[in-house]
Image (cartoon, rainbow, N blue to C red):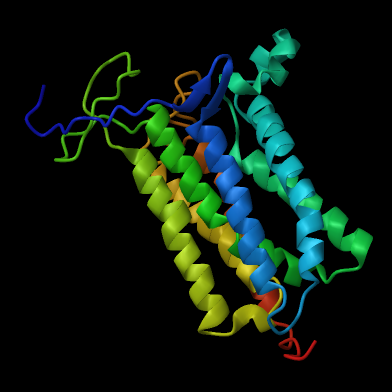
Length: 273
């Protein structure tokens, strides 16, 4: 073993197990992310300009969770292993075996936001901003859960903080890229959208915060992919440098840029409800 390798903190992916019932860190990350998003959204929606009632946030939580789970699973099926699931359709429902896509989950939540805003006559882009602010912490928790599970590890490296992951068949030192992504996609992105919201008052330009989140996540994901090992069954795409995560993030950057430009071209919203 290289002297630069630090021990991987082998944490049991199962937090609590009682007979056949088990609570996994990964599932807990989803729950904690949704609960935090719900708590933060309730606080934000009553700030001027008022978007909706806190009780409506309570109602929306169910649809958000549905969008995350269904969208995340279908995204993984369609984006990452379509041939496998076409041949084994019964496996689509075995969520406990792993396989969720953030890009799919984002589309699922977007569909929920579109439907809920239309159904309850809520200003769409202001509502989307609220959801965008509440999203990055869930991403951070999900990446930390990936690290605890010892999955989605980084590329081989000789950096001083390289680790050997127990489930890695090659058993070589690698970047702990899950932690890089937890910082970039989670902590850093959350700090950016909160500062834009609170310090610069960009809440008055509906859609801008959402654009920063979409574009910011796309850039953070593509940056993190530089250190992350690509999926073994996909490898590198288009000449050996592009990964599926990068490819799926390009439209997010483009759409985020469009949202930002659109918001800046419109007059600010009134501060009163």
